[in-house]
Length: 158
Image (cartoon, rainbow, N blue to C red; front, side, top):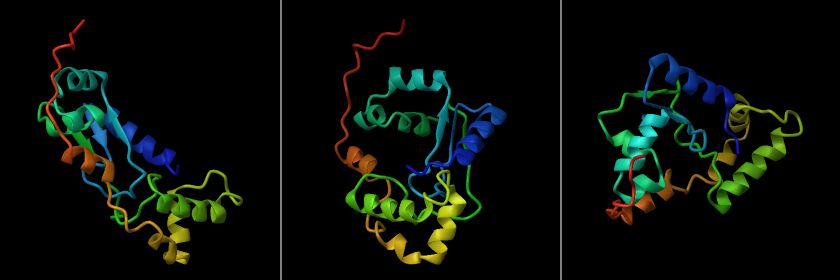
């Protein structure tokens, strides 16, 4: 809900400039959870579709690309490590955090950005406590625990 278009633009520009197969700001996590951006070529996606055999790789799409050395991967990193922050919506606590942020910022500026949220959290650091109990990438971790190899004989290249 608080994705930043400037971060998206940075990742896309880096992807194009570096002629990468996969570019992301999650290879080395430095941004708040919820500001994740992943850009990949159609060819990389097709390769993953045809060859990913683990349930987690098919559900979450990019793990196959991230784990495979055949792809050129580029990491976009923030100057400051903000991984302790969570700006996504998966749980009730996330909703409560987002509700408080929007209550404070949205009326003043409907297009508030990352810098605005960071300024708010500097003034009101207690807001970070609302959802800090939630583990980053909880859904993916759950997928890994339930992983299994799939039979993909039904996939045929056209």
